[in-house]
Length: 73
Image 1 (cartoon, helix red, strand yellow):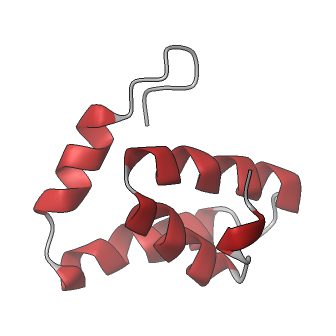
Image 2: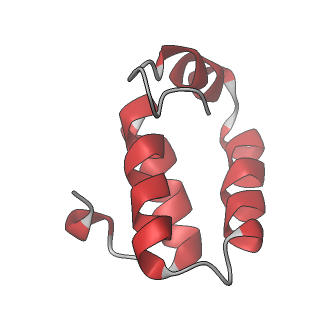
């Protein structure tokens, strides 16, 4: 997802919102699978980026990783 340096999460959010509920489950599961061994601090940072693209995107990734999204800065 582009945006770390420039704060532009629009394209990722727009793509996410075009997906059906079933299609949205794929990025949630793929992200969780790829991040199973990263430190929780890094996972939380990624969830924050996903949330900037779309709040439901961040919630879905957090759910898959078992992280309470209300504790994401």
